[in-house]
Length: 118
Image (cartoon, rainbow, N blue to C red; front, side, top):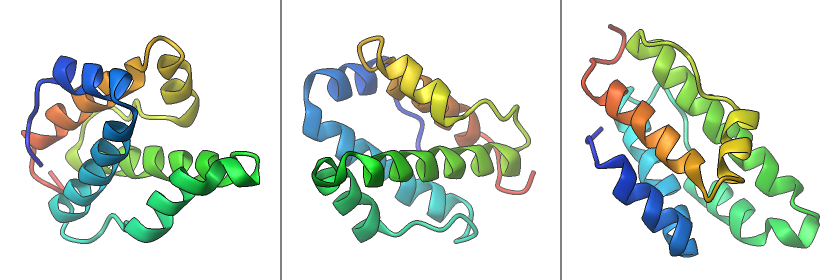
């Protein structure tokens, strides 16, 4: 996992909507690689749920975000840091101009400096 400037990532996600999909995919792939495959990620299912979820009343989108936050929480557990990630925290912060992306990127930066399983 790479450390990135969370403010830049947040602003890109908030003002370029498609970038949030790129960010979510990249973060999930990095978590999977960081954990040595112990954190599972299905790119096709996640991206299609996020892109087409509006057709089914956002239910697939909500489930996909909940699974993403579960992966973040698992990575936090594996890194030995406080498990702060959660669905409602992410949704609530995203109502504040997409601040949830910055919150998660800060978590990734904290995880990135640790070894998996430490």
